[in-house]
Image 1 (tube, rainbow, N blue to C red):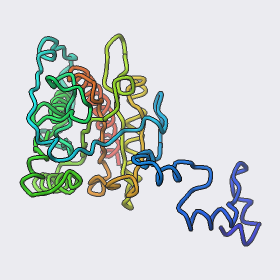
Image 2 (cartoon, rainbow, N blue to C red; image 1 turned 30 degrees about the vertical axis):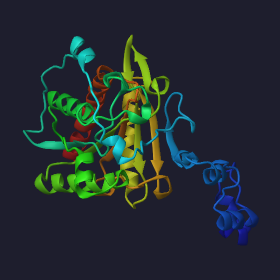
Image 3 (tube, helix red, strand yellow; image 1 turned 90 degrees about the vertical axis):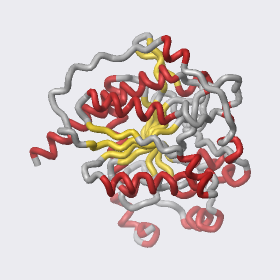
Image 4 (tube, rainbow, N blue to C red; image 1 turned 180 degrees about the vertical axis):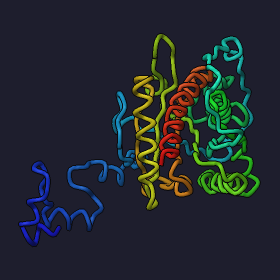
Length: 324
């Protein structure tokens, strides 16, 4: 903008960069439509298209603006419906990765808090008689089981973790609130945990994507895994720390489990809550794990992989902190 008044300032711009014209700046300011970005126009005209306004910070294999994570937004009556669920498939195949006893531990201190803002998000393979993705919800067989598995795997690696089991839907219903207030409810859960345990330093909110199997599944060494996606809210001033955290985890995952991470995206207030409780800690993320068609076996396999990578990140960070 300064370069529009004094051309000497444009010399510091990258060679491929050009200062905006006054007409384009004025047009965007007046209409909220960004020239060159058709999403800014279609988002106003097509219902639901604004979901794709999130920014891709790091794109994993196959990731583009057509397959970003989709947040479920069901009415409360759908969430409260009774459904039969089965874990028979999981019981038949209870493979677990062997983990050597940890050489380092957090000394009995819980440093990771795992919770689920949309706690009833479930998986179609375990819901009897349910084939509609929009009805993939259950009060018990859901993402809280994945959070529990992740905590157990972290513990195996010497990292103390708490897996919150709060039924957010029940709490919303008791308070007379709608699904849109989920983050308000989970914020209270996180704040209570922080107040009761000063050692908690990492906060992972586990979700389930609404995309189908072809988007949310990858085969690594002959085994099917549920893919991950990291979501960072940037509607607060300290989001860069969370973004750096997500970027590092993505890089470590790509190194050891190529294709497992779908990438990192950022969202502001125009794409939803925009904060996602991440203003409470610089080590806070949403982890979209799997989709409606993934099995709990695949989810658990990915939880093990995430714990494996997180432990590498955690002990490296602790070493640097100790040296500092």
